[in-house]
Amino acid sequence: MSSVIEEKKINADTSQPFSEALVVGAGFAGLYMLHRLRGLGISARVLEAGDGVGGTWYWNRYPGARCDVESMEYSYQFSEELQQEWEWTERYATQPEILRYLEHVSERFDLLRDIQFNTRVQSADFDQNESKWCVETSSGQTFSCQFLVMATGCLSSVNTPHFEGMSDFSGSCYHTGHWPHEPIDFTGRRVAIIGTGSSAIQSIPVIAEQAKMLHVFQRTPNFSIPAGNRPLEESYVQEVKSRYPEFRAEGRSQGFGIVDPFPPSAHADPERIPTRQEVEESLQERWDYGGITFLNGVPGLTTDPALNELAADFVRRKIREEVSDPEVADALSPSTMVGCKRLCVDTNYFSTYNRSNVKLVDISQSPIDKIVPEGVSVSGKVYACDDLILATGFDAMTGALSKVEIKGREGLTLADKWKEGPRTYLGLATEGFPNLFIVTGPGSPSVLSNMVQSIEQHVEWISDCMVYMKRAGLVRIEPKFDAEEEWVTHVNELADQTIFPTCNSWYLGANVPGKPRVFMPYLGFPPYVEICRDVADSEYKGFQLA
Ligand code: N01
Image (tube, rainbow, N blue to C red; front, side, top):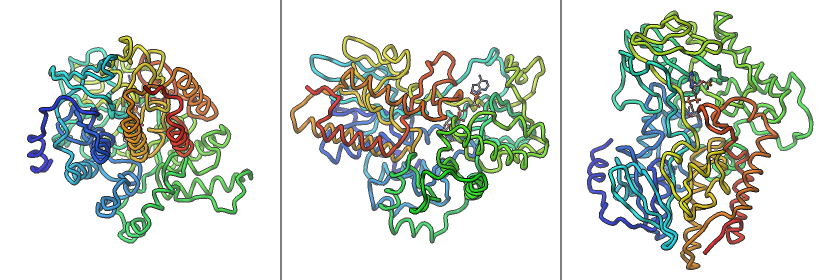
């Protein structure tokens, strides 16, 4: 972090414990929330557990960490000057580059003076008489505010499975989601990594180049598409910048909020079922292009199991072509539908298994027995290692919210209210918790969209709502029970028409033992935006205002 940022952090003014809005988290969401509220004349401050800005990009510093949404899209669009002036260097930005971007944003918009770092929010109580939130931090500091905005992120609470003997391990242990700040050199070391989700799929090829031996413990294989990462061509950057608003609008018009590089021709008949040959050609074109828009390769791929199987089979064939040992290729081939777990995007992932220093340990039938001082034990066999990496993901979407003891009306806690699964209205607010807003909460497109775009949409909706209330002299807003009930049903009905709930994914909370199985994200960015707009235009229907 630059010394200018260090200096401004030290100078942050924390002498006024009341602000109209208190924002928890200084990632993409918290930073823009602060900037927007300030611009609208609403006093705000941000509390952040980390020692710097960045949120998920502050914590996830594992080798190979980069975004799988292209950098020209994975960036703010609220400031035309910012999007014109910032220079991304690669098609997919690395974690250090995204962190530099967010540090730049916080300096550029002078945000640091209202952010208090190293401050973990422990509890928040709603005072019904005053219609205010009283917030307490883990160091006992208290704040109060009219509006509490949880900008705590969807993938910020790490999932650390319990393995017997973990504390006896004699080597070093790391979690990809909470990586040390200093680089770790694995040269000449024996490394074990547990998990084969996006974080592992990005880090395995990089660690394999250093380690003497790398054992990968895989419970479930994942589909992954080559990223096709490369330095950004100046001509492409200039072309996008010459029509940035239009380019952003193209993204907003797509189901996942991401620009489709191969949009269907305006003359194409959407009802016509493509031939097998056409499907194959389209998938090949997208495979060669690289990236997450592979899922757009066949219309209906996320709703029709038969079409999905064509795409799944396509990827399995690619895995067999890339991995020289057929048994390893089989073990790396998922049997699920493609896309039902978050699709991964990689650089040289499958071919890494052709290296003599990389071994896949299939634990699908016999799980890890325990961790012993020397390494990982599976069916009585010990795989010795010096370093153990947990790439075991997150308590997604609800984890960071449930960790804070949030008490709403009548002393109800959020954790209690959500014990059968999260319930929200529009993913923005939850009944029983007045004046509490969630940025990209469960029930909003969030993780099934370009996160930055979804964050901006939420921040603008929430801040506009605060302005509306202020102007109308209103002090309290809360979803109505029926509106929330209908929304939860609607989110689930949409998901049930697709392949998304068909496997054990973190979208369903299935990765965390004991977590209720509920599909959390809302499917469809454009209709969602329309619904939110309609709610605001109709004076916040579905909400109770006082
Ligand atoms: O976590 P994951 P992640 N024993 O939950 C395994 C985003 N992201 O950090 O599938 C053994 O996907 C688990 O096995 P299983 C992205 O949205 C984005 O990799 O549950 N194994 C799985 O293999 C992504 O989806 C980017 O059977 C255990 C792995 O650990 C999300 O973050 C980069 C286990 C966890 O995979 C999460 O990705 C990185 C146990 N007890 C992340 N418990 C980009 O932008 C868990 N596992 C590119």
